[in-house]
Length: 461
Image (cartoon, rainbow, N blue to C red; front, side, top):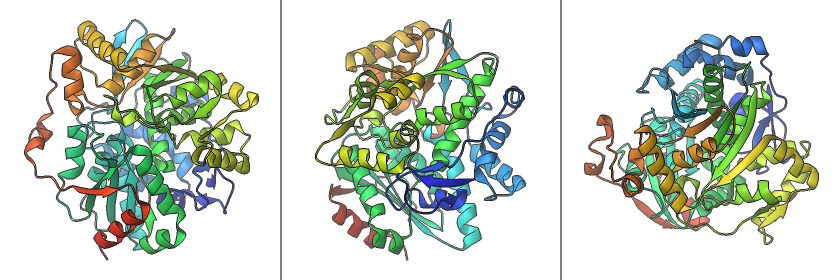
């Protein structure tokens, strides 16, 4: 299995090289040259298996010779050993034909743990074998940063720098990033929004001299291995609900398009997914794209679901690659229009028809999100975070069996949940002292050159 850039440049890479690189040198994202397929019997054979075994079977065709089978199984076992539910990603029925897929049972209480814990294991194994070290630089709108820090904290072969928008993440999200004391961890509060953080990270990777000097690696959802690991729970959920004989739809709260693209990957592999429903908050560029074909930035408004406060959805580029018959130059042109003075682009009718053939969309404003949190609390007795409520709101409005992705623990957003329900969710025991831990915060301007100098200064030799 080899991986090519969505913008068509450079020679294809094998899995391990693509994983360690993160972003292609032409600025594009890595995608597999072809899609491995699982037939109906293979999918049916996943029923009753442990999450770890399903992860091995789903991911194995993509990794080539990067890890021997026995070694890969060990990495998977280590990755999920710290989850607090034996099913890793259990289902909770919240309506007659609606289920919540609970993805917050990892160490930082968010779906990012499902992939990041495994990425940490794979990075460490690959770097140890190579005798190499890297500088990980990532941007986060909230949950990716804490999950990445948890996965890489204390690792000798990696320094990790996480850029997050200053004042635009929840207190729990911030403290998860700023309280680890390990010397290789650096949380940087950028005076801007998530798109500013993401733009700075991409600019660093596109500065090849800086990239090579610092041996940059990326673990955002731009990293193909992240997306691949997230595709696993689509299989576990669908099979638990009757796949392959019963098609299942999924509603996904998404800002950067990575989590729902993982569902698209599962569908390309043969999982009988009916509809993939893009669920957004008021920062609704993805919803507007499905509805009108116009993919246009309109600025980012702060919300109670900050992990979705995004207008430049990086992983949408991967889908654009397929919508345009895998023509790299067409994708590169669209991305130049998005990041340049035009601030967006309009899909051709053919590309829009292909998009709508796979995806639906829904959008919720702040009042609607609060009402959903209150509704689900009253009807089910469970507290859901604003992001999860958005996914479940889209799911319950859809006809047929539908899974809404519950992407974070309610305690990560206690103020919003308490305002909607009158109940304040408590942190789990292993995190009960989070508010008492000392923070280390570096505040920096949204200036790429300044951030590069900061990274050079703080990175270990």
